[in-house]
Image (cartoon, rainbow, N blue to C red):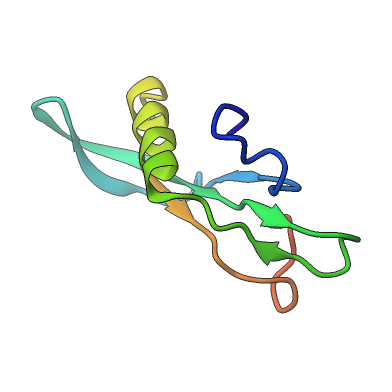
Length: 92
């Protein structure tokens, strides 16, 4: 995100591994049963409220491709677009 100069607008970007969830996917020539991860980029002034950061699709594509190519157990990347409130910044 630093290369895309998004580090100025993104305050935090927690990443959540959904370890209890399996996702069916295809990597290479085979079917996989990996785990999804959630990206949660947020912008905030005071952490009392936060809004999800709008990341260009091209950057999201690069992030997703790199993660799924380099982390063998992950075959799906999703984006959390919930504001705070009602959501919180970190997942529990």
